Length: 134
Image (cartoon, rainbow, N blue to C red; front, side, top):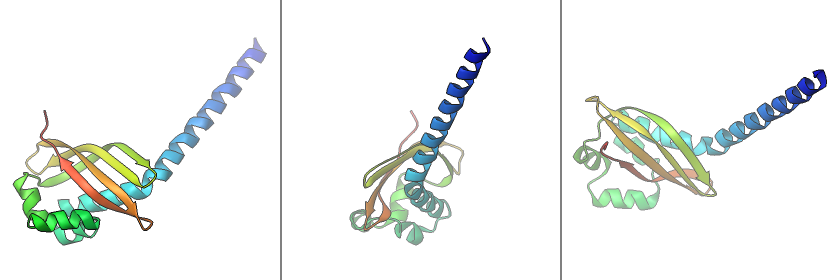
């Protein structure tokens, strides 16, 4: 009986170590993309739209300039960001996606996602969506 407990304890400890390594690697690999998304969202929250734009890639900047910039586009969509939480983070090679729930200044919540591409070893926001909560 004691040897079974010892073996079970060893297996359990091994599983804890493997899960810990997997979680560490997941956060380590997605960390740089999440950091850029967080900086972008923070600048949007603080209404520093020019700074938020510096985290965008050229294709998104071109699209935004055709729409009058970041500020009018977000305001037209009713995005007045207060806070956000991240429920999912994923990177695959040079593409990343962050998803979660954004709380607006009026207290409403909207699901959001931020798509990122790694270009020249730097993560850049390639797109974002704030969706009406269904």
